Length: 326
Ligand SMILES: Cc1cc2nc3c(=O)[nH]c(=O)nc-3n(C[C@H](O)[C@H](O)[C@H](O)COP(=O)(O)OP(=O)(O)OC[C@H]3O[C@@H](n4cnc5c(N)ncnc54)[C@H](O)[C@@H]3O)c2cc1C
Image (spheres, rainbow, N blue to C red):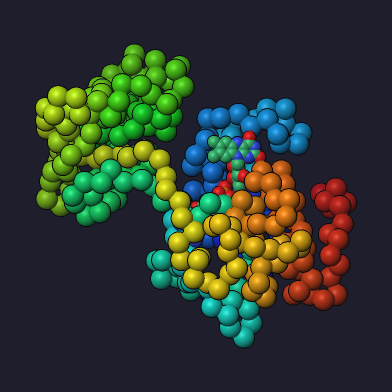
């Protein structure tokens, strides 16, 4: 991989704004995120909630805010490394080299850590052979709808994502069965009603206990947690939507000053490592607010400071974006 001016660890709202601002300042950018899609907490944790404290938006759905922040954050064409976790950071002659869990080596001149509450990983159902079937029958979310055409699908979960995928895949799948461990849903009532009116079968108070098949999944065994009765359901694919876990994980070993799972910075969002900044939910300083509105300001400041590190002739003040030619 080529050396970029700035590597942004985390493609949440704050990392996206850092990528946008770095592009605005003519810097080359790489975004690394452990999730397969950008958007951070907005996308992973609360896509269906309204956000009321974005300047200029009296009310905006988190999913829509993420979509627009992704459009803004990627408009200068940053390189994106998605579905991969930053695991190691090593100083070299020209800055830093970031290593990822999938073995990529990403050289960079500066680093902006916008890692939020840590690398998100989907919660697993926790049954034997689950890892063996990942992407060969077990999927944590849906990236390509067409993959599920004509298949017998099991959707696990009771939140908005699970319900949305039931409705979205029902027209193309051979069958869809929702497996949920309770009879209450966290999803919007309206969506739940739509699922109930659809051809989606429901197994409530049920949990997946076994995955059946040789090279690919042919069925699942579900167990009713009230009666302990077991049932085998034919299945070609299991779509798991039961949330995410997050952890700062390997970042704790990078030599950063960390207090209570947050990276300590000074007032210019510099960490104790040269050329490494921390912004957004992951950083800690007196008066820190874990909000998007404040995080994006931190990102703009960190980017401008990184710019002056790389180009001492550059001014810290970026000028007004409204002064651009187009
Ligand atoms: C239910 C809920 C409602 C909220 N409502 C509001 C609201 O109304 N207004 C508001 O301002 N804020 C709200 N927040 C908080 C807001 O979402 C956060 O402040 C914001 O998401 C922080 O953005 P971020 O970019 O710093 O981090 P995040 O959004 O957490 O993104 C960090 C990204 O970094 C990635 N990452 C972390 N470590 C690594 C690694 N080692 N390698 C690769 N990738 C990594 C993660 O996978 C993640 O995608 C809410 C939060 C929740 C949970």
